[in-house]
Image (cartoon, rainbow, N blue to C red; front, side, top):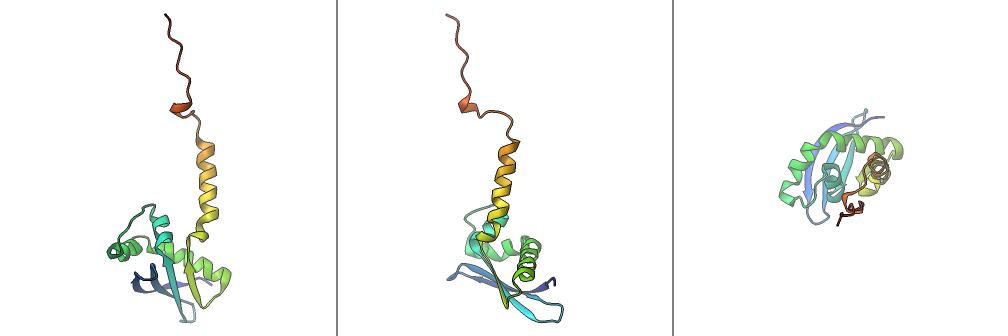
Length: 117
């Protein structure tokens, strides 16, 4: 059962998590949270200051909420907590794809041509 958008609660600097809610089809509120590290992984940027977390969440809200909904479907829990471990398989798959896309040798491994004397 997919969840729908709820409300933004805000960033908890002490726990380093961003809190938000989502709703079930029967209007039950589900408390959700995402770690700051997981948000940075989604945004592909590091070092976001606590004062910028709400803007970061709003920018990637659809992706974060889709992930929360998918986790709810798998876990059917009273609350959803999103951490970096939820991205490990996806990250490893992307790394394998990028590794396979490399067609050239890196510049530091190439042999320099011998000079004629």
